[in-house]
Length: 501
Picture 1: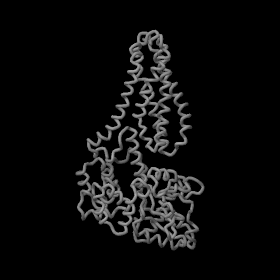
Picture 2 (picture 1 turned 120 degrees about the horizontal axis):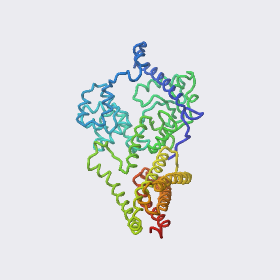
Picture 3 (picture 1 turned 180 degrees about the horizontal axis):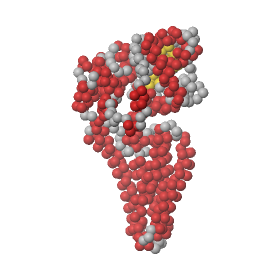
Picture 4 (picture 1 turned 180 degrees about the vertical axis):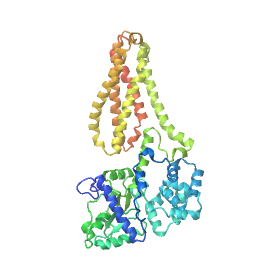
């Protein structure tokens, strides 16, 4: 499978697309869409004369605006937290237009819940509202046993497209794409292209932002925006105005990598191609927005030492919730036993100098906190594509300096706390200065160790093809706890042997 080709924005040969021009292009494109809709018989609402009262209201300060909210917007916002009975009742109470808008705004999981509640006759009209890629998502949510029933509700063309999409995993570009898009031939002139575009506008097409130029064998050779198409002279050939500096997505590319391509190029849709360059469909920005939300939720749960939940929190059964949380807690519990073993190894030192035990929580928490900080920063940088495996050495050097700086700061605070405490002689004895030095040096060593551990562990996991988010804060903290005890008592033995030990 080929990698991403020519990683440059679709319509900006000079460099990255600038936000202002992108917004302007959006409005220009919308004008073009309106002209197409007029040509196909769908009329846009007539322009209305300015309303002075409305303008005055728009300029009013926020505190003067009414607090009334739109009930329909509130329903969409509250939908995930509602019970099945409440959802069914609320959905039935909506008129057809609002019900369609709500249905199209729901996730595939929530759409599946509604489909299961309605009769077979009603299912046809609701399933046919969906684009082929959304139907494929719905089938995957309902499970294999419902596949044939849902496919029988579709027309022949859509059924074939859905079958093709179901051949791909739902977490790769092939499973995200929609096979309906605007197609043009390179030998068309602009007038012919606009006429053909009007014909395609009558069909169910995923996006009106770009038209893709294909060879007879469906090999993608160019792309043009509606703006460029309508601004071009009518006699010009499509091959003369199309852009050939393309950003394409391999059909088997993982959805996280697809999201990165979108973030780097700032476009509304990207073409999906096979290894021979044949265009198979498009992935749109709204598809990627849901992917980003899913990936962020999964990473967040993993980082909290919880297996990712497949259903919303309130819909996850109690036993399933315990199962998802118990596995990591058991692993961490057994890991913490090594901390107890380490303390048992130094029990003689603790018996001789009980004062050392006072600082154990302070010492090990410093290491765990610094390690959690470092792992959070590195995991996030990896997710954004800012760091690759080969950058580990640069990160290692930076984190040595950061760990030393943070360790000196925290160690100095800990040592000064002991030295300046009014009752230090009573609490820590006559050798309080050496205890202060022990605590200060231990904090320095443990913070440095925690920082290096937290920053390097994600690289190790990624090297072995594991999810870096598995380097969760609790896991890093537990790992540093064990080694922190060893560092603390080793330094104590070095400084206090013959005096307290």
